[in-house]
Amino acid sequence: MILCIVGPTGVGKTKLSIELAKKYNAIIINADAMQIYKELNIGTAKITEEEKENIPHYLLSISDLETNYTVYHYQKDARKLLEQFKNRNIIFVGGTGLYLKAALYSYVFEEETDNSEDYSNLTNEELYKLALKKSPTMNIHPNNRVRLIRFLNKKDINIAPCKPLYNAIYIGLTAPRDELYNRINKRVDIMFQEGLLEEAKNLYSKNIKSKALNTAIGYKELFQYFNSQITLEEAQELIKKRSRNYAKRQYSWFNNQMEVKWFNVDFNNFNKTINEVQDYLKLKY
Image 1 (cartoon, one colour):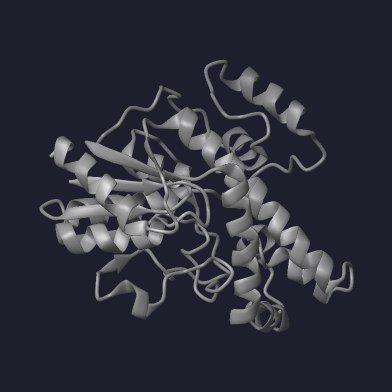
Image 2: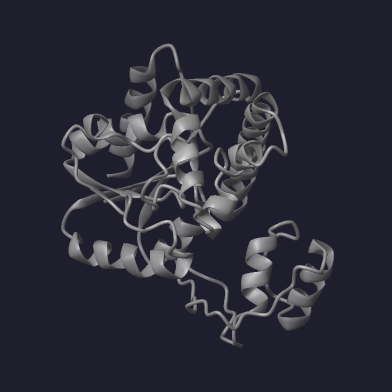
C-alpha cells in the first residue's frame, strides 16, 4: 500500500501518519520541501525523534542548506525508496504537492544548471505567456513563478500529460477556514516559544545565502528583521499571514491536481479522525 497524507500546514498530517504507520507497519517518507534541509527544524515544524515513535522516516534533513535540492533530486530519491521498500507499506506525508506528483506520476525533469536564463525583469503574466508559447498544453498556474521559470529554462522535452505510475491512495485533512487559520496563528506563536527566533538568528550569523532560506516561511521574514527592515512584531505577523496564504494555495493545488479523499479533522477528538480514515482504508484494501 502506498498512502499519501496531504493537506495544509497545521492540520495534523504528522500525527495521523504516525498512527497509521504503527497500524500498517509502514515506513514514512517526507514530502515537505523545506523539511528536506538540515537546520530548518522549528520553522518547518519538523518531526522530532521522540515524535517519530521509532517509525522509520526518510528524506528528512538530508540536504545542506547551501545545496539547491530540487524536485528533480526528490524524484530520484523517492523512487529509489519506492523500489527499496516495494514490499512494505509506504506513507508519504507533507504539503508539497509537486514533490508527491514527481515521485508517483510520470513527470520528466531535468537537473537544473547554472546556465539558466534570468527572467527577474518579467512579470508573472509575461512568464506565463512565454511558457504557453513554448508549449500550449502546459498547465502551470500563472502565479507559480518558480515553476514557470523552471519550465522556461528546460530544454525541449516531451511535454506529455503526466499519468500515475503507482496505485496510491490520497488522504487529505481539512478544517473550517477560520479554525485552521486560528491554529496556524497559534502554531507560529508556539514556534517562537520553542526557539524559532534563536534558530533563525543562528542561521543568519552563518551568512548562508541559499534558495532554501530565501523561500522558507519563518526564516526569510526574520532575516528581514535582523536586517532592520521590519520590526519583530511585523515579522511575526508576516509569518502568520504567509502561512495562511500558503495553506490556501495548498488546498487549491491538491483539489486541482489529485483525487483526494478529504476528512474534516476533529481537533478535540483526533482519535475520531484517525478511526474515520482507517474505516475508509478498510474499504480500499
